[in-house]
Amino acid sequence: MTDPAPLGQPLLDYAVITEPFPLYAATEGAPPTTLHIVVSNGGTESVYCREIFFSLPHGDLAQSLVDGDKDGDGSATGWTVEQVDPGTPGLDIALPEGEYEHFRATHKDEKAKVDRSGITITLKNLRISKEPGTARVEIRETATKDLGNWPTSVGYTTCALTKFPAPEVPVQIVNDFRADKPEAASGGDVHLTWRGPTTIDYTISYGSGAKAATGQENTIRDLEWKGTVTRDTTFYLTYTVNQATHCLTTTVTVPDPSLAALRVEGDATVVGSATAGSLTAVGAATVGGALTANDAVTVGAKLTVSGDASIGGATDMKALSADGDLTVTGNASVKKDLDVGSAWVSPYKLSTGGGSTVKFGEGIDVSGTVSASGISVTGKSLVFRGEAHRLIHYRSDGVDNGYNLNQIDSGGVYLADGGASEFYFE
Image (cartoon, rainbow, N blue to C red; front, side):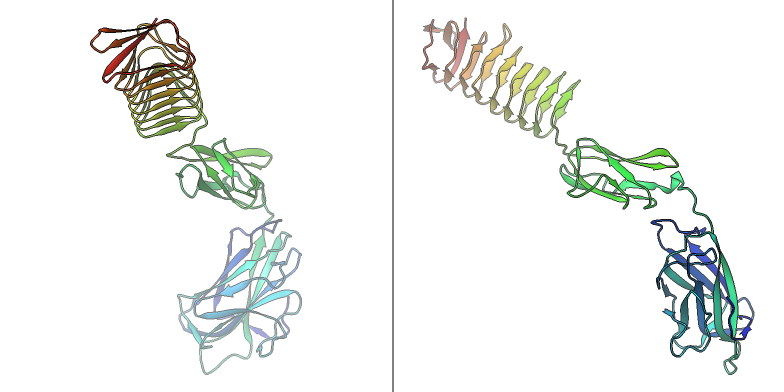
């Protein structure tokens, strides 16, 4: 690493800072390295600098610094930094022979004054060689303290850089696992990111409320994961370091979750509309808007719906109150009172507990069996096509109209009057 030209002492001081620090011999998949070369004037006189050459030993040896092929690019405020070859026309100095990558820094006016504030020259995207050892960056400057008297030889110095053996990945190097948004709408996108080396495998796991995006793998190295979420989901990031498995978690909340089924041990209150595949509540359930259930609804106490209710399966509850229409595709079983503000439509049976009353604001259409001690219909008709024992029809004033039916034919029974009517089964 000798230079055939006579060399002088540099007028400026040089130090090299590596990023990352400390500098490790490269491993497979290691990110590129940046060198910050700090040039300073430690004397009391001004120094004028025309150009500076930095020669980085190239190769795969212990004394080599870089192992790339013409990689790296440089920059410095007010300076031009470019990579050059020894045979480049117009070079004023002889560069060392052998395997090197050379960078030249020149100021725009070619006579830059370097004071105590100094300059910083940055060389980025350098691939470090794989063998641990000490490499020396050779520095050649053309500088003077007298603008009218430039030296005949360049100032020469070196900066030694140690490449340490690459350590095992520390557990703490994997961190900052998070979603770009802590909350997402049902079916909304989720983007997870974290910090860590790209040389180990990461696995993302989650519950049934999340789904990976098309083409997204769950075991990855590129430090990000994309998918969708339909309800509150905790994501798990697992990885193995030093033969031990570690885990980080992050949670994305969903204010409008989509549920396949819901079971509530205590009371349940829904302020707006509710849609569920099936609904089970041990206590009471109150829905402020409409209720749509694609399957069965089971409520241990009273179910109250402010709007319309549509139930796809059988119902089983102690009492039910709906201000709007109530549609039940399956059998309906209400152990106490049933109060429907609008119409009731069901092709299956309706049964209530003994001594209870069933009230409908508009009408009732039941194709299956009806079992109730009393039915009250206000202003509309009762349409019944199923089986029953004796049906007794009363007016609201309690006077018997004489409708005593011991048999109901296949055409059904249609009873109505202009006011409130009460129907009793025996």
